[in-house]
Length: 451
Ligand code: GLU
Image 1 (cartoon, rainbow, N blue to C red):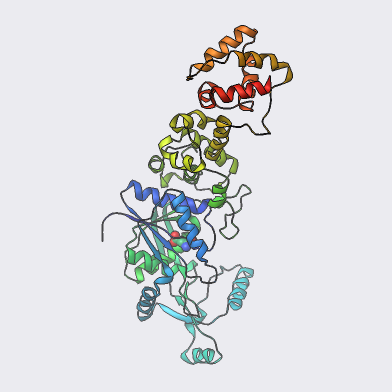
Image 2 (image 1 turned 45 degrees about the vertical axis):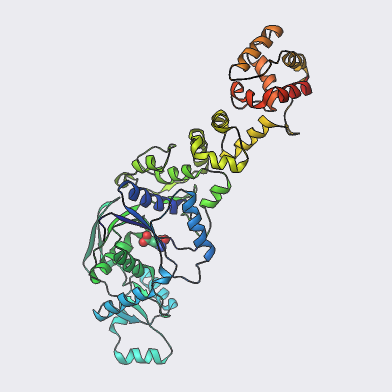
């Protein structure tokens, strides 16, 4: 086993990844990156009724979209032999017992306990069954599920986010680790996997804090070294509701469809609800430097889509041509680094570069705004004074100075109608830089159409 830290991201493929999943994923992936460690993608796909192959494909796609490539991959559905072997060891060690209650019976017992102000903890009724009672239940056609007998006492660990944690194991139910159909459950399979893969770090949502107490007891029972645990605060919708894969809320693919930048999603997922201000970053390495688990807030953080969209726009403004060249080419946007640098500050999404490329290389769409009738003399004068090519960044200044002197117009009264005539839009990238892309022939055509 190597001494490089091994982190893991363990989604169940039962829906599309959402921003909260991205938080867990990125905290693991970025810490692995910063520490020279590795990342395992583990698909927790034992729940055959809810798992769909399309979600497996979507998880891989979403990771790639975020710019992440796991070093290892595993699927729980392919590891039944390992779980079976660990199950037999626990059974031989006397830590497992069969139980026969139906889901309805368990539910009724929990409700009764609550009504009598008792904690809804399983009362270990099945542990007291005699061999004859078990045989009788099985004769009735009941098949057992299996519970792990917790050792009692306190589970304690130093949590990477929350500091020292202690949980009284007697306050928890003995977990069911195998269903009556022989299928194994997450709380157990996760421990077997973490132990066998040599996972050294588990960073996950704070909804798993109680599981950690149970899982530490399972690691001990299996004689395995537990990883270090850290439980981060959760994200909620703007209304304060928990994010759900099944409800499809705030999914990464919905962001992709809206043109939100993956780097902005990564920055938002990591920086929201932390001591760091939400801000654009130049890349995942820079973001990795900003992760500090101990400084995450303890309260849940609310996702504000508008804040994410604004962060995405700022991220676009800072994207280097080299990093976006293939995407621009795929969109049919030309003009190289100069065009990108001309328009990027005016974009909300990268795809909007296409709009400016069309405006530059025309024809202007029907919907383009035209200058007002009272500006037609100005536009006619501008057409007459249009300089000869070649054009560069200085052409606009020289030309407008000339047109200004000839018409007596200056400031907005001069520039606004000219911009409208040339681009069909009241605002946009600096014309000094855009004009050479429009070129003399198109400029003349547009000015003539407006004068
Ligand atoms: N499949 C579990 C989940 O998505 C994994 C939790 C863990 O990281 O152990 O909640």
